[in-house]
Image (cartoon, rainbow, N blue to C red):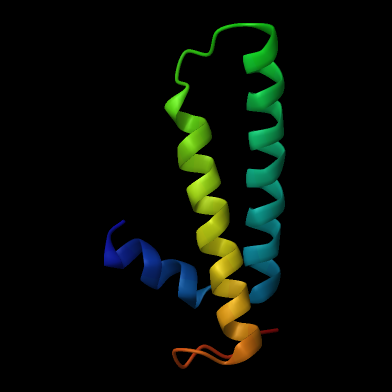
Length: 74
């Protein structure tokens, strides 16, 4: 992942990150549901979503623990 994308994520407020996280989780759920019923056009999207979710969760956890100079944002 490019540094510019990570920088953009770190500039977001906690509420924005949590909103994005909820949307990604919903999209992952939908893709998993569709994959059980039919073949997906882009099955690698599931892997990409899982990794993006992990990045956002890590960012929130870093802010909670005040690691890497990240502080919780309103």
